[in-house]
Length: 223
Image (cartoon, rainbow, N blue to C red; front, top):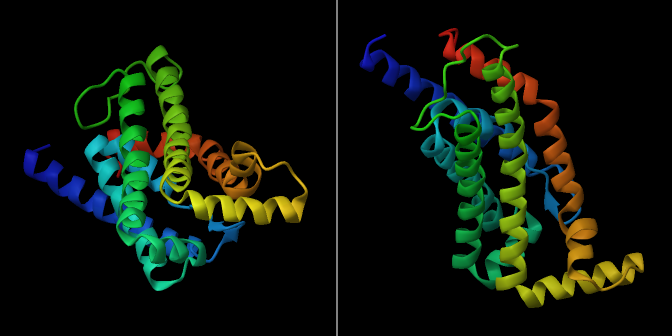
C-alpha cells in the first residue's frame, strides 16, 4: 500500500471518528445522571487512539473537550455553565485538557502494552490466540480503563482545585439531601461523578472485544 493511500485512509478514518465523537457527545449532553452528563464518546476515542496513535487520540479527545466546552457556553450543560460563568478560561482549559488526556493516555497505554512505539498500532503476529493476541487484548482493556480514569480524574481534580467554593457548595447540598458525611472523596465518588464514571468505565469494558475486532479489521485492511 502506497504512503498516499495510507494517508488517505488515515484521514478518512479520523474524519469518521471525529464525526462520531461530535454526534455522540451532543447526544450525551442530554443524558444526565447527577450534576453532569454521561460521556458516551470514549469508545471511539479509544479505538482511534489504538489504531492511529497518541496524536490521533489527543485530537479526538480535544474534539470531545471542545463539544463539552460549547455545551458549557450555551447552557446545554447547566452545571458546566455555572463553571463557565465563574471562570471561562479555566473551564475551557479543563474541558480541553481532560479530553486530550483521555485520548492521549489511551493511545500511550495501548502502545506500551502492545509493545509498539510510533504512531500506529502493531500488527498482530501469531493470531488472536497467541501471546501477541493476548497481549493485545490486555492492551485494549487497559486503554479502555485509562481513558475514563483520566477524563473523570482530571475533571474532579480541576473542580476541587480551581472551583473549590462551588465544589463545597455542591457538596453541602448533597450532604443535606443524603445525610452522608461532608467528605470530599466520598462526595466525588457517590455524588459528583462516581456513577457517571462507573457507567463510562462499564461501557468501555463491555465493548472492549468490539474495540479489539475493529483494530484487527483495520490492520487487515478491511476498514
